[in-house]
Length: 273
Ligand SMILES: Nc1ncnc2c1ncn2[C@@H]1O[C@H](COP(=O)(O)OP(=O)(O)O)[C@@H](O)[C@H]1O
Ligand SMILES: [Mg+2]
Image (spheres, rainbow, N blue to C red):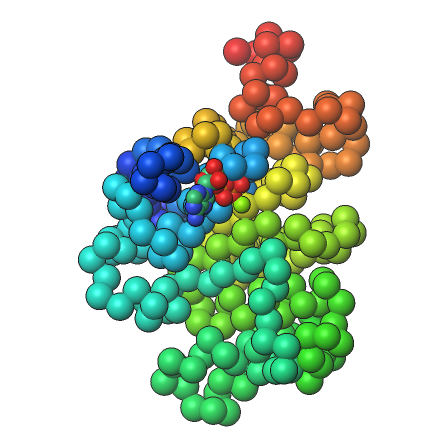
């Protein structure tokens, strides 16, 4: 699904400084707008502030200055951030963080403990989500009985349990082999397209980033590029680039930093700009 024009998340001059004597400016005046149905990759070198940004978006940490608005609500004005977070944000981390003694089904039920649903409705909901992520045959398995990819599928189902406004994923495929990485990215892409889930995914895997419609590149706590391919040439290029052949032809194994650079290089080459 293409994103519509409803804003779900907005940051305003978001800044985070860690430390008191020796300080690190992990985020430096970040302005970012996420629309409903967006599927956004956040890329950038290690230490560029990706995780800090994601933690701020999810209300896991407070900004030093600036603000985060989710659905128009400023997180600084929220009385009980834990409850607000559990109703509006789903998280997927690199480590799946499943509870080892609970089955897949029970792990997905966990976030529903605050909901007004009946016990049966919670089980039905968890069941439905596990079917959605392709684990209908693993409902009663413990995390230790699942493969890495299956565990991450459970984590994705759990993140969706409360029907959150946004799902935040921090290097969700960081521990997976390359085939499983593509499977998980395809699942997220499918959820975005069929369920309209708004997903923000931190990744340093450029192949993953290329599967997403919008790529935000960070460096030193700032956003250095934010490419949303337009219709026409940019979109064609994005799609061509996503194909294996396109990637090989365009990049010859060398992946440029971001779409904007690639588009500009090609436009220059073709005399289109
Ligand atoms: N809790 C913390 N205390 C001190 N410095 C931190 C903390 N968390 C992150 N940083 C620093 O902030 C910068 C951005 O970190 P991070 O957001 O984790 O980057 P990324 O996820 O892009 O690798 C880094 O320089 C990191 O060392
Ligand atoms: Mg990180």
